[in-house]
Each structure stands twice: as C-alpha cells, then as structure tokens.
Image (cartoon, rainbow, N blue to C red; front, side, top):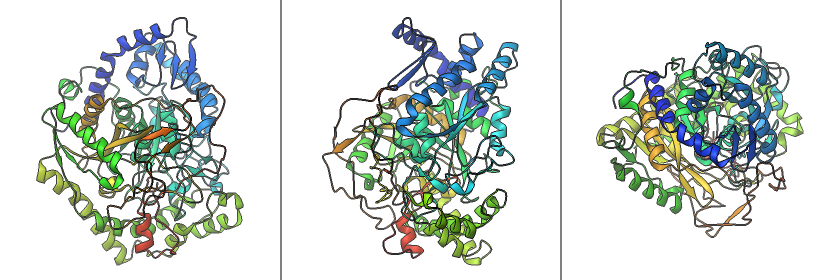
Length: 615
C-alpha cells in the first residue's frame, strides 16, 4: 500500500462525505417538514432537518460554517438524547457540566473565523479510564471514585486544543475486564451494566462497552476508547459501529488507566470511517484541519471502484459459528464484485500467541497499575486494591472474583528473564503472523470477523465469547479497524481489517471503501429480547479447546417482541439490572479488550471452575 499522510486522508474522506451531504440534507428536511430545531425518535435524532445518526463531522462543520447549526445546538441535542435514551442502555456514566460552555466558546470561534479544526464544537465522549481534571476517572472501580485526577490525560489535552466538546464519561467493564477470571463485560461497580442497544438483554462486549453502545445509540458523535486486545474492535463490531485500534505509540497513553504499556492504546469509535479518521488525526497529533487542496486527494477518495485491485486475505474463523461464516462468505462476494481480490488465509502462530499473552500481561499489569495508583487518591498499590475489593460489598454485586489481580500480584517481575523472553517471543511471532501472511499473498489487509453475535448478559455465568481475531494486531502493536459487515438476525457483526505497522492511514482509506461497498450499518431498535432457533452450537477456540458457548445465538433469530422501543418511549428493557456478561476468551484491558480466559486457566493455573475472559 502506498503511504499517505493522515491529513490528506482525512481531507479526502471529508470531501467524499460532503459530496452527498447536500442531497442527504434535502431528503432529511423533506422527511421532517415543519420539524422543530431538534426532535428525537426511535433510531435517529433530527436537528434542524439533519439526522445525527447518519451525519458526518464534515457535514456538521459545513452547516456550522453556513450558520445553519451551532455547537450549542448540537451539544444540547446530544444531552437531550442521553436523557431520553440512555436509561435503556446505561452507557453514559456522567455528562460534563461544562459541555455547554465549551460549545458556546466554539460558537464564538466559528463566528469570528478562528475554527481550530474539524473537531471544533463536536461532542466527544470519553471512556472512564481516561483522566480528566474536571470529572472523576474511575475505571469503573469505587476505589477511584473520589476526587478527579490532578491533570488531563495527554490525549484529552489534544482534544481540548482541537476545540472538541468533552461531553462526558462512558461506562466500561471494571478495570477493563482485567480483574476477575469470569467477568461480565459492560459491568462496573460505579456504573452498573451497559446493555447492547440492538437487543437489550445482549452484551455490548469488551471493556469499551459503554463507549460503543453510546455511539451506536447516537448519544455522541465520537467516543474515545481503549484496547489491550479487542476492546475497541469487538465492541465496535457488536454494536454496529466503526472502531480503530491505532498502531502502538501513535496515541499517547499518559494519563490512561493501564493494563500493559506493551499493548495498550486509545482509539476512536464513530458511526462512520470519516469521523473515525478525523478523531484519530487529533489523537495522534497530526494536523488534519486543512480539508481542501490536500495532496493525494483523488487517490485517497473512496469512490465506486476504489476496491478494484485490492488484495484482501480472509481469515474465516469458522469457530465463531455457521451464521458468522455465512456472513463472511457474502461479504467476500460483495468485495469481489467491487473488484477486490479476496483469498483465504490462516495467520500462523496463533496457538503460541494465545499461550503466552496472558502471563505476560499479568506481569505488565502489576508494574503499570502500581505506577498509576501511586498518582491517585485511594489504594496506592495492587495489594491495597485487592484489599479494598474484599471490604466493599458493592464491588461484588455482579461477580466477586479478583483472580487476575491476585495472579498479577504473584506474577514474575518485568525484569525477570522469563518474562522478557515471553514478551520478546510474543512480539516476534505476532508481527511475523501478520507480515508473513501479507507478504506470502501480496495483501493490502487481512480481514476476519470482529465478533460473534452478542451473547446474553449473565452475571452468574460471565462472558460467553471466543474471539481470536483481534490478538495478532493487538500483540504486534499493528493497526486494526472494525467496520459493520452485517447482521445475524438482529445482532450486528463487524469485519475486522488489519495491516502492517503504522499503516493506519492506508487501512482507514481501505476501510472507507469497504464501508461504502457493504453499507451495512443500521440504527438500533432497542428490542427487549430475541430468541434463537439454534441451541448448542459450540465455539472451539483458535488456540486449543476454549470452552463451548452455553448460549449461542447462531441460526435464524425470532423476535420475542416485535415492537421497538422509541427513543422517548417507556422503558421496557431488561427487568434485572443484574444482567451482565463475562467473556470466555476476550476481555478489555485498560487499553484493551480480551485475553484468552481459558488460556489463563491452562497457562496460569487458575482454579478449575474459573473460565478465561476478555480484556
């Protein structure tokens, strides 16, 4: 793939978005004759005739430039929607009391022609493991629920400098799913359980659960989340949005609650690739404010035929079920019809990666969380955190375990030669896994399912997933991108794209072309439940035997209740706030998602009744 700057990429994507903005705007206004400046309804929120579920940042900025929209109106629309919709999905922990004043300041900049860039005046939600000086940062734990951090995370400083409106904080899996051996993704003692907005008794996946659910439900334009292994791309796939895990080191992790400096990264979630690319350009500190006259515009612009000649390696992962596999077959056919060459591949070394990753993360977590806790009020080290959880019953309402904390406390130091050998082998094999596969087949990217259909949330059982696709890029520090691929019944499935080191810009450009071709996203309907005709489908993991799915959702889906819940309708969601899920192999880490949970049991000798989970 030819390299191009992120500035030219985002410029091209912005122009592509604006090419159709006028027609879409006219259609939206025609559909809403006599509408108020802001009105909400199921699946969409209209503001001055613009559907915020489908509007892109360039379209919003174009309206602001013409004086037809203000940041204050946009921010107020999202705040109203949070109030109306969030009680159903419980994705937003808190809104920022200064959000409207930030928006008003942006309106002044727009009026006097001093706009700071494409994010100026755009509402952004932050995962609750990203430090903010004006709001609590808890990682979902009551242990950190006291006073806010003294300073912003470095990435928050970049967002503020770009003029973004920091809208609030999103719920997350407590400690990014790196606490218990059988966690439930989307649950935290601070925020309770987040629900999947497509089907409310289903799980949102990963530690960035609240961020992805909020984006899917149009409670924010963009969310900033984190991943260690899968916690951006799995929630993106399971909630039908776009998620970009950047190459390691492109986005500063200073001031982000850690799991592992060797794998953690923050990255954006949005409803389309162009917004994702714009947010990434700010997070990575590269100027994308100039959206006109950028070099490489014609080449980068996603357009019909832009997939022609691209070579994509499809890693099918049939272990995720027959329905997901069938969706991958249909996806490959659509990409081929657009001119792409799709060949089937199986990246090597996956068993060994699964065996080594979790023990290495235990050592790294002990080192990195110890350093972070020393900067905050509350427990000062990992031992103090373990004791806090033992003495606070509210930390045990969904699951009581903290086996990972205890294992990390006993793990070898990161100065231990055994650990160093493990991490060196992980780095080598993960990079070779991708590099060798791409070189052998002349690929532009590797594609795979980002997630299975969402499992039911269940605190007693814990997570019920096996998702190996995120691991190679997560361990290698290479970029990955999840775009909506389609649905199994009512449940979204994403297509995960991965490429070589620092090929983020090319991957985003390819992802935009794939997104345009598949056109697979649709707004959630907030269904209370669905049921499956198929039961007992097993999921055998990519690396050895990894526990069968107890509650598969493969097969045709039959709605239990056909009526969707309107954005302002009565709450008919799950009766039990205890509904939760915990992942079998994937978990979110403070920057990440899933680590083989069964692998944890096998490699680290967890008790027999402890299953692997996701980071």
